[in-house]
Image 1 (cartoon, rainbow, N blue to C red):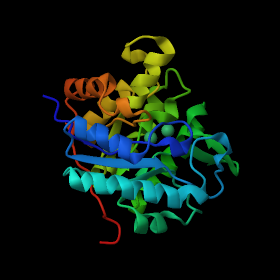
Image 2: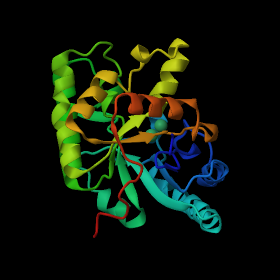
Image 3: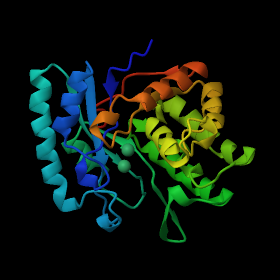
Image 4: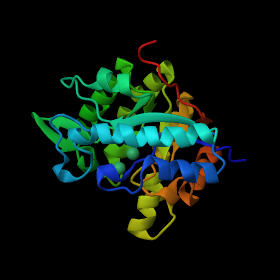
Length: 268
Ligand SMILES: [Zn+2]
Ligand SMILES: [Zn+2]
């Protein structure tokens, strides 16, 4: 029943909170009989410094590219389609996306920060409706640029909000409609499932900070495409129980599951 043979959301040791190099993930993908693997390390970003240990430094980007190339030759030998990517935030005043898209196959949007009163605010720590609205607006601007082929964990804005109101959830409906219109898959993120298990030692879906079942029901109502993302930070997470659980949820809610991402799309 589970046809998960392609995975596009994986990290490496370079972000300082994950393990492994692209080659390690490719070997695991080969072991799992995968047809395709994409590596999407957290992108170096001007202004957002690596001091908070969530991303590589700009100076490490050439190293990332060479590690990807090393992976690519393994992938070719073993007949796995291999894609080079980054997970990245969108800010209107940053002008780096085209440059990344020249070096890489794809960018996935993981909006871990908003800008509030000219300051970065982590989207793991939003509290108020107005902050979720800022997040929503930024994500919509981002999707419209054409830089991104997938929207990662959109419910990250509720990470710090235990019981979002109906109005808060509804703020995200235009995002879902836009993703459908642009045919950009929305991620059902398995790493949020792992995190809830670690935090509460429970498999209860009500403990998930993301994904959120209420949100996914809206995605179902709108018929937007959904892709399961492992968001792998350890090699043995590539295809684990959390990925299986994500599929169970997607099947139960009868979501419009897709397995592929558009690649090398921007300059076409
Ligand atoms: Zn990460
Ligand atoms: Zn990620």
